[in-house]
Length: 296
Image 1 (tube, one colour):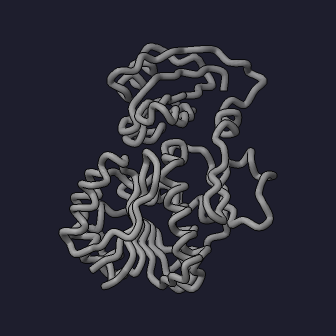
Image 2 (image 1 turned 180 degrees about the horizontal axis):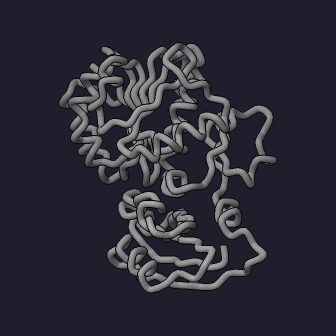
Image 3 (image 1 turned 90 degrees about the vertical axis):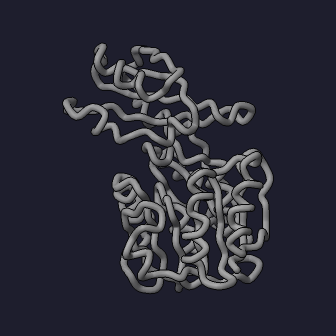
């Protein structure tokens, strides 16, 4: 990759990115697009990088410009002897949460022997995966298992990369799990990640079922419900809208883990689930809080 286009964007814009191949259907080699992690002091300011193997033209720059309302694309030529995509992945530090260690390929040799390790390539889904919320969900799962919680039927809604479903199966290997996403590309990414990490796909205990679904609108989810553990790392608005559907799909006394929301949005999300009879068990710390609730 010898050319890079960079532009600032918001977190919401980063999460709404389409696949690179869809953005540039006429290019034989579409760019690789990754999102740079935000400054903790400015959690809504993200930066996109698009790596091209040939100099992009005006049309390509205009396409990238549509991805961010306020961002102005900056074009630069890079040292052709360096694999800049690998460099950008290497810049994504591993996630360390509880007993989990999640890393991109360049950090493989850093895997601790005592940890539950997952390799997630730094493609689009991982680059916009909100490390703070991902780590918070992993830590919450770890605490639940250490406290003696046991689950047999797990749902990961809006899975992105499959990671949280992988983690659930690692902690409760006899459980059945399903991971869904509204984006078919995310489901394909999850399938690839399952292969990389040795997660068995299927419908039986200890296996993961993948499906495309808009929220809870899926015959596969309907057939699997009720779940004793439901995880959703998405956004505050959809979490509020889906509260009735999530409550209906969770077994009595089951656990719901919600993430992807700012601490300032947490009260509204909690109220939406309390109106469905759920009880708040834990409200995680930090800018990106993780909520653990118990269904009615």
